[in-house]
Image (cartoon, rainbow, N blue to C red):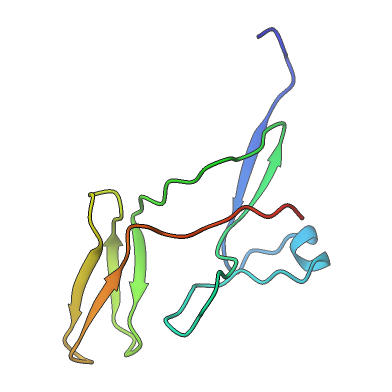
Length: 105
């Protein structure tokens, strides 16, 4: 209370350039089914604040291995997201319990 300093957060998505990301050789990208561990999918430039939790609600976009794009993927409806890729004849699932961590650069 009474502090007049301004705080802000800027979200950086894959494809956006930022000097700190380049300096630390961080490349933002989508996670794939082949990834066995966490990958950097989002970066935030924070001034005057520090994130402590993330709620991955969506909407997101999911792309199957056959290239079919599913828009409007939501993870806040209390269940995993599931759909069917008719082109690949395979089911698609994204678990609502998304594992994440914050790393300071």
